Image (tube, rainbow over all chains, first blue to last red; front, side):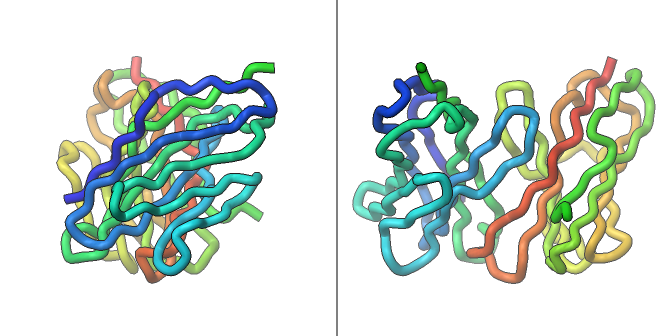
Length: 115
Length: 113
């Protein structure tokens, strides 16, 4: 079975500061990893994903994440926060193997941007 | 041009009633899902269908019954609604491979009184 841990249910950063949202995963098979964003009263939208290949992946709105197998991590970063980044962020994993074919979400991190 | 749509967007009802939520996707995907998001924003998969066939059925009360009339539609019927069913329900769809993105609908906010 796979699982995801997001450290910090709430993160606040100043506008223009670095955004770092942490995600660690557990999977017995090679994982596919995703970051989704949920704006208030909306559905989830994909920010970026790692499946194979380059471990540093770039997504929409200036976000990027690095897959580190040795640390079982997939942290999300953005160099300079913008007010429009305020939202709930979810890390998710799907294990590639029989019985694991479902997306398992972390508990989410609410990002607040301080003007 | 909405990719995954759900109706209704809001649903307020009394305990014990039966209600349905409809989902349609125009992405040509074979796989569709229902998720439940509770008040703490925790997302949990409920069901998954692939080409109208039930693939995943998590430990969901049998008051919840999904129905897929064709691969573009996945509806959720809930019998005998309880207070604890109050949540946001999301439909999603995905293409053939697990590496593909799941596209989510806007959600249906269900409030049981």
